[in-house]
Amino acid sequence: VYPDQQIASVRVAERIARLIREKQQNKEQVVLGLATGATPVGVYDELVRLHREEGLSFRNVITFNLDEYYPMQPTAAQSYVTFMNENLFNHIDIDRENIHIPDGTLPKEQVHSFCLDYERKIEALGGLDLQILGIGRTGHIGFNEPGSAPNSGTRLVTLDELTRSDASRDFGGKENVPTKAITMGIGTIFKAREIILMAWSGKKAPIIRKAVEGEMSGEVPATYLQLSDNVEFVLDEAAASELT
Ligand code: F6R
Image (cartoon, rainbow, N blue to C red):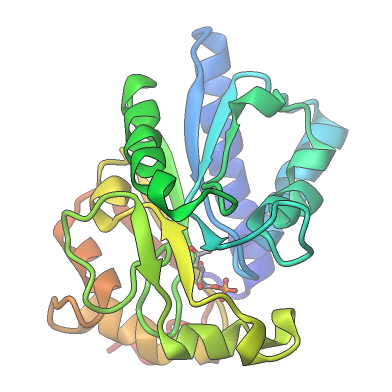
């Protein structure tokens, strides 16, 4: 638990930078699982600063984003492709071929094989070294909404009404928020060697309490993280305020 999200974000960015540099020294690639939304923005800002001011290179970095709305054009303002470009990828030296984000443009009949392929690509690269997560007020990680299975893989899902309400401002009204998304599964996330879930502000305090201290249940998918030894919650004081 950190005094504020700024300090916490810098710490998480430093850990990512350390991992990248360690792998660089060994001439290895690093495979990162990335999230969108408000939560990781401070981490991405700091990574961009480390690139610009301290020479951190992303040439050995391969990324897989957790999710994308479906359907969604990559050029749309609300797409996670646009988000990642604006907040990180446009400002660092990552090889564009190393970026993976679920494809929101596929015809429905191609989604399943795309999802299997997403899993295969991660596995072929030796798995995710580090996955960063936010948490939704439904307890979702990625877009694994209540009811998601602990061994779920990348797939097409239906978004919870609360998640769509939370996204309504970005879309100029809830009616414009897609009803579906493609997301990595809980099982996909679980296979990462390290998982960092971040949450800021009192708005997240009730769900953080449930996720950390509540009974494990598919009703709060983030509770499945209690099963893993490789998970760390990074919180500001407000998000941690309801923990006992
Ligand atoms: C985003 C994602 C979501 C968000 C969650 C929290 O890629 O997978 O699980 O992390 O909805 O969103 P923010 O950070 O906007 O509160």
